[in-house]
Length: 94
Image 1 (tube, rainbow, N blue to C red):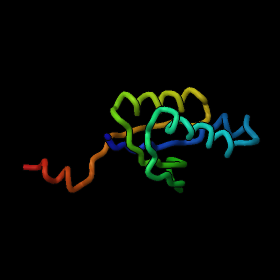
Image 2 (cartoon, rainbow, N blue to C red):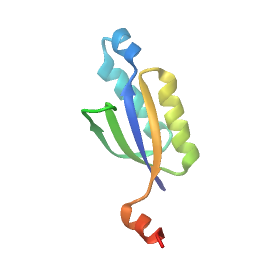
Image 3 (cartoon, helix red, strand yellow):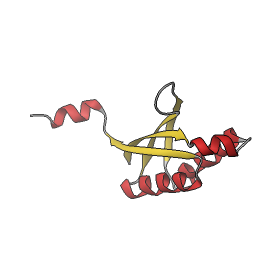
Image 4 (cartoon, helix red, strand yellow):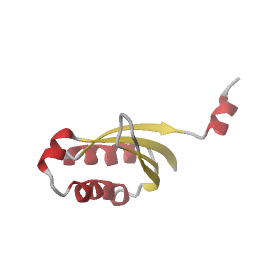
Protein backbone atom coordinates (compact mmCIF):
# COMPACT_ATOMS: atom_id res chain seq x y z
CA UNK A 1 0.00 0.00 0.00
CA UNK A 2 1.10 3.55 -0.69
CA UNK A 3 1.43 6.11 2.09
CA UNK A 4 -0.11 9.60 1.96
CA UNK A 5 -0.53 12.69 4.10
CA UNK A 6 -3.73 14.67 3.75
CA UNK A 7 -3.81 18.23 5.09
CA UNK A 8 -7.34 19.44 5.78
CA UNK A 9 -8.85 22.83 6.57
CA UNK A 10 -12.43 23.46 7.58
CA UNK A 11 -14.18 25.35 4.81
CA UNK A 12 -14.97 28.85 6.17
CA UNK A 13 -18.54 28.71 4.86
CA UNK A 14 -19.11 25.36 6.61
CA UNK A 15 -18.23 27.01 9.94
CA UNK A 16 -21.15 29.40 9.43
CA UNK A 17 -23.65 26.89 8.02
CA UNK A 18 -23.29 23.86 10.30
CA UNK A 19 -24.06 23.95 14.02
CA UNK A 20 -23.02 20.28 14.16
CA UNK A 21 -19.61 20.86 12.57
CA UNK A 22 -17.75 18.10 14.51
CA UNK A 23 -20.34 15.59 13.26
CA UNK A 24 -19.94 16.87 9.70
CA UNK A 25 -16.14 16.54 9.92
CA UNK A 26 -16.49 12.96 11.21
CA UNK A 27 -18.84 12.14 8.32
CA UNK A 28 -16.21 13.45 5.91
CA UNK A 29 -13.52 11.30 7.52
CA UNK A 30 -15.67 8.17 7.07
CA UNK A 31 -14.84 8.37 3.36
CA UNK A 32 -11.38 6.95 4.08
CA UNK A 33 -13.01 3.73 5.27
CA UNK A 34 -15.61 3.75 2.48
CA UNK A 35 -12.87 3.63 -0.15
CA UNK A 36 -10.66 1.11 1.63
CA UNK A 37 -8.01 3.60 2.73
CA UNK A 38 -6.49 2.85 6.13
CA UNK A 39 -6.04 5.90 8.32
CA UNK A 40 -2.98 5.39 10.51
CA UNK A 41 -3.43 8.57 12.51
CA UNK A 42 -5.06 11.97 12.42
CA UNK A 43 -3.81 15.08 14.19
CA UNK A 44 -5.38 18.45 14.96
CA UNK A 45 -2.95 21.31 14.36
CA UNK A 46 -2.45 24.93 15.34
CA UNK A 47 -1.37 26.19 11.97
CA UNK A 48 -2.38 26.61 8.37
CA UNK A 49 -4.32 23.35 8.40
CA UNK A 50 -6.86 22.16 10.97
CA UNK A 51 -6.03 18.45 10.60
CA UNK A 52 -3.31 16.20 9.18
CA UNK A 53 -4.10 12.58 8.39
CA UNK A 54 -1.55 9.87 7.69
CA UNK A 55 -3.17 7.11 5.65
CA UNK A 56 -2.50 4.16 3.38
CA UNK A 57 -4.30 3.50 0.12
CA UNK A 58 -3.95 0.78 -2.48
CA UNK A 59 -2.86 3.34 -5.05
CA UNK A 60 -2.84 6.99 -6.01
CA UNK A 61 -6.23 6.68 -7.69
CA UNK A 62 -7.82 5.65 -4.39
CA UNK A 63 -6.16 8.59 -2.61
CA UNK A 64 -7.50 10.95 -5.31
CA UNK A 65 -10.97 9.46 -4.95
CA UNK A 66 -10.99 9.96 -1.17
CA UNK A 67 -9.72 13.55 -1.44
CA UNK A 68 -12.15 14.44 -4.23
CA UNK A 69 -15.13 13.06 -2.38
CA UNK A 70 -14.17 14.78 0.89
CA UNK A 71 -13.81 18.09 -0.98
CA UNK A 72 -17.18 17.62 -2.70
CA UNK A 73 -18.98 17.55 0.65
CA UNK A 74 -17.95 21.17 1.24
CA UNK A 75 -16.91 20.71 4.88
CA UNK A 76 -13.17 20.19 4.45
CA UNK A 77 -10.70 21.44 1.86
CA UNK A 78 -7.82 19.04 1.33
CA UNK A 79 -4.28 18.87 0.03
CA UNK A 80 -2.77 15.39 -0.37
CA UNK A 81 0.85 14.34 -0.70
CA UNK A 82 2.35 10.91 -1.45
CA UNK A 83 5.14 10.18 1.04
CA UNK A 84 7.76 7.53 1.78
CA UNK A 85 9.69 6.96 5.00
CA UNK A 86 12.91 8.97 5.23
CA UNK A 87 15.07 5.83 5.48
CA UNK A 88 13.63 4.57 2.20
CA UNK A 89 14.14 7.97 0.58
CA UNK A 90 17.74 8.20 1.76
CA UNK A 91 18.54 4.90 0.00
CA UNK A 92 17.46 6.54 -3.27
CA UNK A 93 20.08 9.26 -2.98
CA UNK A 94 23.40 8.82 -4.79
